[in-house]
Length: 82
Image (cartoon, rainbow, N blue to C red):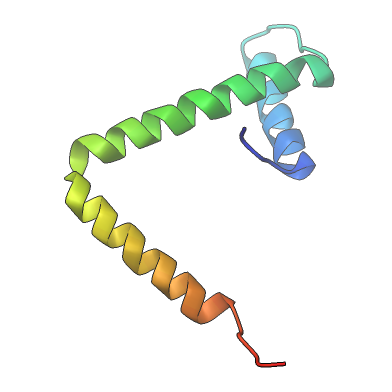
């Protein structure tokens, strides 16, 4: 599942409409575009993950991920005794 905001979706729809206008193609309805948008997000995400794994050795990813999780825990979570 890929999460996105309605604002992101609507901005992507406007861009799609602009490109369709430039190419003299008919617009598709907003709700019809949702499926297209979700498929594009999935393709983009899969391509990004594929590119990342090809360029970085797995142990480096694991080390980087561990550091990022540690940073997040240190910076984002406040532990207080009750």
